[in-house]
Length: 206
Ligand code: ZN
Image 1 (tube, helix red, strand yellow):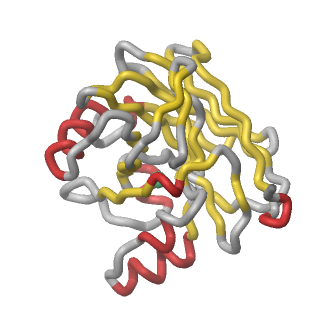
Image 2 (cartoon, helix red, strand yellow):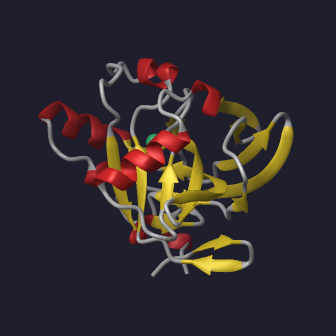
């Protein structure tokens, strides 16, 4: 089973619960409707990765992530909800489930988690090859983290070690071999975490 790092301990998430549309400007950039209830999907443990392995049509979505223990947020991090956008568009058009586009092996690139007392004021910055491409935070979220955790637990059940991906701000885009990302978690201009990850060709694996 794949693990994530929290306070020098390895944690094994059973699942990663994600929200599909949580920032208005990102909903608009994909020409989606603002949902009347949150759109959720789940990535399995086998989706967890600390690197990006290239696939055709790969897109990045930088997101603030939360680590759950005893039904509460105990840690925060950053991650990439990797998405096969063309596949997702085709599935969406047919009204079919999104797993092929969202839950494939390596589709959840997760940083280590830092302990937090509060999610208030958290924000993410995503740099692609040195350019700031995404910026957003909990202030811009339609559904705030405490609502998400309670709602996801009510529907799916959240277990110790599960991870929540809280949606992506505008500025998503494609990923090519050799692209390098810096994801920064901050609060009030203060850096809480920085995570560096590059896209590898699958032949570079192991
Ligand atoms: Zn996402």
